[in-house]
Image 1 (tube, rainbow, N blue to C red):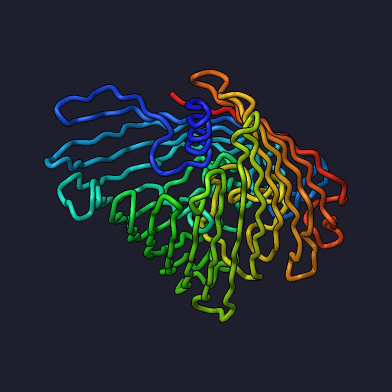
Image 2: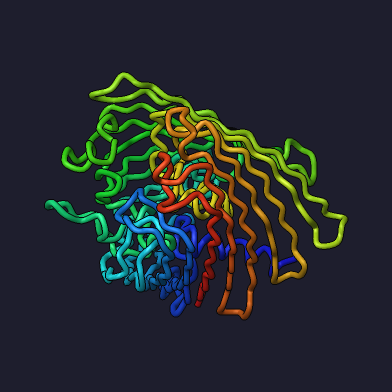
Length: 446
């Protein structure tokens, strides 16, 4: 199943954008020095029969659009004794959106931008500090990505607005490629990773965003984990330090300055082969200008029938988000549905991991080593301050196919069924009819 594992990894790396380049070509490796060319490219084609009023869209009808980006640059490392290394990378991203812009009115279809993405420098300890294990101390600064757990709260800075919401002196444009999330790096970081891959470990972090759609939030915190063969237990604390006073009130992020978020989580199999368990509980205390504290949590269980043909798996998850809960920098992490719950709901129609309860069932199977197929069901209830205005159901059917060594294709068809139209307080413009939605993503690793 080697190729199948490769496929799953590259889908997450190239689309979700986990830390580090999705693929790299090594062109120099001598005397402790390595140099790589980093290349990551993706193209998406999208179609939605309906539009949504949470962005700039005001007219009913369909939307057809395309997104693409290419990330390119250099990375490398230099050995400096006892297995320790200095490492770093510099990468650019060129991105764009074409056509009608997305169904939610976040992009217009006119976005084109090339800008700096990664620019970081770090040092890892190798065997220099035996008490911490190999590479038990890793220090880095600069423009880079950062994730906690499976991205329920922080999965890099990957919200990519276009220019559709610009106006009145405001500029949200980050270059488009809204679904593909072309840009993911925090603008400034200082991160200390302490401990190895097993046992007790921790991340101390300071992150500063230059993303207007995140109100240029500055935050710091501590993530601690205890890693065992049966699973990983995690405890994280995140404190908001600053926001842009112009953008924060517009986006509803006025209380991020001084906000305190504490998270307790677990993920693993509890020592039972084929079992998957994952859960997280978050308590959030509002910062300046608000006394509305909020909570969010989820619990998920799954089973893989590994002795059955195609090794099918089934998972069920329930998640609950209080009104006023700030989901921070959540993102696509371990596959479709985490943490964008529903391709239509999470990207265009809402709710967006706040003020909702969500039942989710997923099915997945692998007909071959290079192909997996899946189906997702979501039921959104108790939305919009309990009014139910954004209550809906969604079904998504998808595939992940390694078509060639340098081409991965992931088509998806979704059916979004809102309980209310925009005229009735919902977000779908013109009707509450079922929306037939489709997308196909091509990822080109080099």
